[in-house]
Image (cartoon, rainbow, N blue to C red; front, side, top):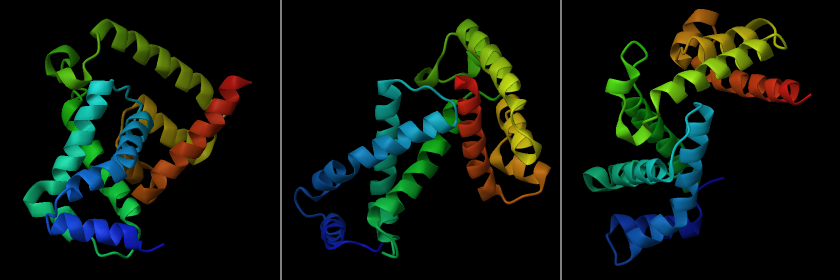
Length: 190
């Protein structure tokens, strides 16, 4: 699906800085950005507050207007504007979440950003419970799926590190995790 006439007009109005263009743009795509923020956080196993979500949405929209709408100027119209913004927003949200999360080797209490702060005792308790649950549910998986889930959820490896470890393309890791999580959910319910 290509660029719709509505989005083409909205894009042109924004780039020409017409009155109310930016407000219309935000109104049109705010729901999409909120969805991307929620989905990205959930996919990474991170619970975010309403304030965190608002901050991440603001980060996305600030990146869009940065450098005189450079992100919008770089849009080539080969897909829908919503598809392009989904990819852009996801990359921004992942980058911001990674900036705010503590490095596993550091003391979580001293390095954690207030935006994603969690009581350290609750975090450890939840993490141990999650690890035990993942370990239990891993028995229902086999082969590469089990290895990818173990590396991601139990060892905290990135998609890139998992890709290197299992010898498959990095863009295959997300779908494998998604399928494995669905199997694990079904196994956990029964």
